[in-house]
Image 1 (cartoon, rainbow, N blue to C red):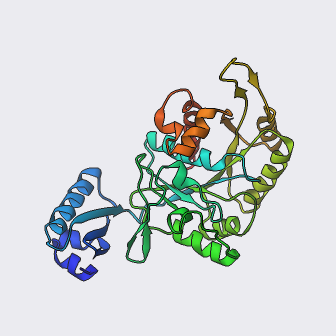
Image 2 (image 1 turned 135 degrees about the vertical axis):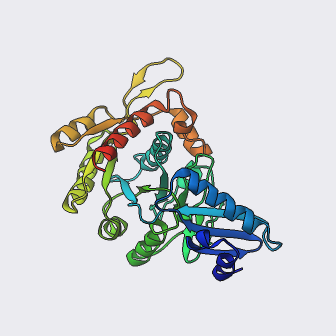
Length: 320
């Protein structure tokens, strides 16, 4: 069934809002523009499309994607100067915490060469659908749709692409069919390379969050990343200190293998907000490896992510 057939099978008032649609192997995907409608009207349209298309003999499953293209979709880039500082873990948990605060959030895993969000969000092996010529993000239990190169290539496959190819891949991930999500968190690769430049030049984030561990080498690289955003006139929302303090599970003693307070001092020196600290905790690592992000579980390990999300949410409200 093509776009034309789908439109013809719907009432005129709904058909006028269909952006694209199609059926493949019994699965229908219909994208509907609901800009300007309240939640009640959106729900009525979604149910009507599901019922009418689902009644066809050639359709076994219906997925309705609601989009509001007239609403400005804002992008928050999450970056770091170097790898291994926990940027992806922060991005996933921040997205869930913002979702819990009422934001309609999507997540782009822009670490083209080392995607990890499918593992953290528990949807490894899933593949995105297509709506017209756009990718439809992969859902998960946390209601944070995500797109990653990890959803597009075979698990474990090496991605050996030059800069332009990586930039094109980023474009497909960001320019996807995000439905009602009006806030995208973009998990950038470490450093200041081609993917970051493509993001800054083509998609212009509303703001950026920088992640670093407390030691001096990581802070130097984080300052470079901050300088890139500053040169591109993208405001830095603030800095996050990750792996800040380790509590021994046996004796309770607190140690600081990476130092402590370095990111907060760096934020002061750079005259940027300090958003908070995330501890070096076994539970956070286990949650990331098992697809059970701490921010979705609540409790002590979720608290640092929730506190950072509240500050980011306040920034979004102040800079609407």
